[in-house]
Length: 106
Image (cartoon, rainbow, N blue to C red; front, side, top):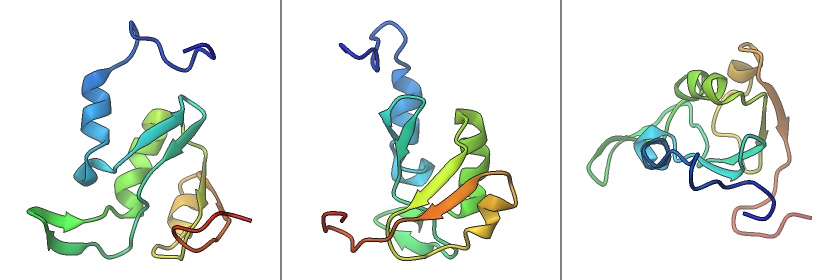
Protein backbone atom coordinates (compact mmCIF):
# COMPACT_ATOMS: atom_id res chain seq x y z
CA UNK A 1 0.00 0.00 0.00
CA UNK A 2 2.87 2.35 0.77
CA UNK A 3 4.18 1.91 -2.78
CA UNK A 4 0.75 2.55 -4.30
CA UNK A 5 0.45 -0.96 -5.76
CA UNK A 6 -2.89 -1.57 -4.06
CA UNK A 7 -5.84 0.72 -3.67
CA UNK A 8 -8.91 -0.68 -1.93
CA UNK A 9 -11.05 1.82 -3.80
CA UNK A 10 -9.77 0.79 -7.25
CA UNK A 11 -9.27 -2.95 -6.69
CA UNK A 12 -11.56 -5.05 -8.91
CA UNK A 13 -12.25 -8.13 -6.82
CA UNK A 14 -14.45 -9.73 -9.50
CA UNK A 15 -11.68 -9.47 -12.08
CA UNK A 16 -9.17 -10.84 -9.56
CA UNK A 17 -11.39 -13.80 -8.65
CA UNK A 18 -12.03 -14.57 -12.32
CA UNK A 19 -8.40 -14.57 -13.49
CA UNK A 20 -6.96 -16.32 -10.45
CA UNK A 21 -8.92 -19.47 -11.32
CA UNK A 22 -6.94 -22.20 -13.06
CA UNK A 23 -9.35 -22.43 -15.98
CA UNK A 24 -9.09 -18.66 -16.59
CA UNK A 25 -5.31 -18.50 -16.67
CA UNK A 26 -4.23 -18.57 -13.01
CA UNK A 27 -3.01 -14.95 -13.36
CA UNK A 28 -1.89 -12.76 -10.48
CA UNK A 29 -0.28 -9.35 -10.53
CA UNK A 30 2.95 -9.32 -8.51
CA UNK A 31 3.44 -5.61 -9.21
CA UNK A 32 0.21 -4.19 -10.68
CA UNK A 33 0.49 -3.17 -14.33
CA UNK A 34 4.20 -4.19 -14.30
CA UNK A 35 4.78 -7.86 -13.38
CA UNK A 36 2.24 -10.68 -13.69
CA UNK A 37 2.72 -14.31 -12.67
CA UNK A 38 0.88 -17.28 -14.12
CA UNK A 39 1.04 -21.04 -14.23
CA UNK A 40 2.11 -20.91 -17.83
CA UNK A 41 0.72 -22.00 -21.13
CA UNK A 42 0.96 -25.47 -22.62
CA UNK A 43 0.57 -26.47 -26.25
CA UNK A 44 -1.61 -29.46 -25.39
CA UNK A 45 -3.72 -29.20 -22.23
CA UNK A 46 -4.50 -32.38 -20.32
CA UNK A 47 -8.14 -33.44 -20.28
CA UNK A 48 -10.35 -33.73 -17.18
CA UNK A 49 -8.15 -32.58 -14.30
CA UNK A 50 -9.97 -32.30 -10.97
CA UNK A 51 -13.31 -31.59 -12.58
CA UNK A 52 -12.03 -29.15 -15.19
CA UNK A 53 -12.51 -29.91 -18.86
CA UNK A 54 -8.81 -29.36 -19.35
CA UNK A 55 -5.69 -28.55 -17.38
CA UNK A 56 -3.77 -25.52 -18.55
CA UNK A 57 -4.28 -22.89 -21.19
CA UNK A 58 -2.66 -22.59 -24.58
CA UNK A 59 -0.70 -19.54 -25.76
CA UNK A 60 -3.71 -18.63 -27.88
CA UNK A 61 -5.86 -18.54 -24.71
CA UNK A 62 -3.48 -16.02 -23.16
CA UNK A 63 -2.90 -13.70 -26.13
CA UNK A 64 -6.16 -11.73 -25.86
CA UNK A 65 -5.89 -11.61 -22.06
CA UNK A 66 -2.33 -10.27 -22.32
CA UNK A 67 -3.42 -7.65 -24.82
CA UNK A 68 -6.26 -6.64 -22.45
CA UNK A 69 -3.79 -6.15 -19.59
CA UNK A 70 -1.07 -4.56 -21.73
CA UNK A 71 1.43 -7.41 -21.31
CA UNK A 72 4.30 -6.90 -23.75
CA UNK A 73 6.80 -9.59 -22.68
CA UNK A 74 6.62 -13.17 -21.45
CA UNK A 75 9.60 -14.56 -19.54
CA UNK A 76 9.47 -18.34 -19.34
CA UNK A 77 11.15 -19.59 -16.16
CA UNK A 78 10.75 -23.34 -16.58
CA UNK A 79 10.93 -26.03 -19.25
CA UNK A 80 9.37 -25.31 -22.64
CA UNK A 81 5.81 -26.62 -22.83
CA UNK A 82 4.63 -24.27 -25.58
CA UNK A 83 5.87 -22.67 -28.77
CA UNK A 84 7.07 -19.17 -27.88
CA UNK A 85 6.67 -18.11 -31.52
CA UNK A 86 2.91 -17.93 -30.95
CA UNK A 87 3.49 -14.94 -28.66
CA UNK A 88 6.15 -13.35 -30.88
CA UNK A 89 3.81 -13.59 -33.90
CA UNK A 90 1.26 -11.59 -31.87
CA UNK A 91 3.67 -8.78 -30.90
CA UNK A 92 4.41 -10.14 -27.42
CA UNK A 93 8.15 -10.38 -26.81
CA UNK A 94 9.45 -13.63 -25.31
CA UNK A 95 12.54 -14.51 -23.28
CA UNK A 96 13.73 -17.67 -21.55
CA UNK A 97 15.31 -17.59 -18.10
CA UNK A 98 15.23 -21.28 -17.22
CA UNK A 99 15.68 -22.71 -13.76
CA UNK A 100 14.40 -25.95 -12.27
CA UNK A 101 10.91 -25.61 -10.78
CA UNK A 102 11.04 -25.19 -7.03
CA UNK A 103 14.67 -24.10 -7.06
CA UNK A 104 16.10 -20.68 -6.41
CA UNK A 105 17.07 -18.83 -9.60
CA UNK A 106 20.79 -18.15 -9.99
